[in-house]
Figure 1 (cartoon, rainbow, N blue to C red):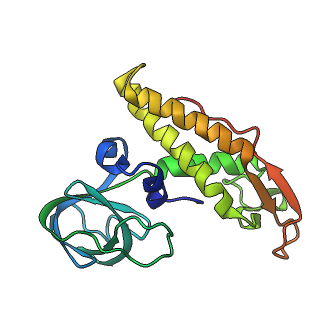
Figure 2: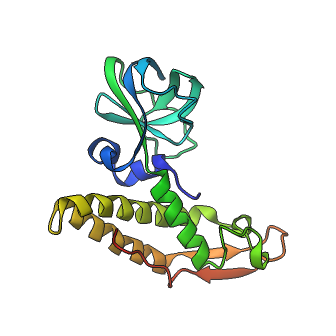
Length: 213
């Protein structure tokens, strides 16, 4: 995929705190932070069993942090949200005995990812069909924002389905759909057609659309 949970946090700093119930919970428990390390005192699922990895987001005592690494079944390296995903770790605030939740919106990201690939003429369920695959995209980073906006539109649409028309979730979903449409019209995807690593074609995403959940 072109985006992950950490990337969603850039656009919605409180997403995992306020809309975590609309995502997929991986782990819930109690833990403490010392330095950059979160140590769980108790949890419903071990971090390794839940496949918590770098790029996920952990909410500790109501504050969301990037997961930098999983150190073991009950320990993670965390960082405050960084400007650059490859930048140095920014230590979280110390915490003791706080509620910990790891929630993911990966299914929403994956659904948007598959739709974007199909519009580009790449069938995710039949890799290699037509000679062009996801690996043929020379500038995948250009699609990160689009994928984030699509996933956020999907997440808020799901919430709006429960809260009803006219709710704040309904308005947020509409806003993200509009931002997705604008980004869709802006993005140009560079494609390597012959496997030499150099772009041979440019494709646009004007045909992709989002449906309300």
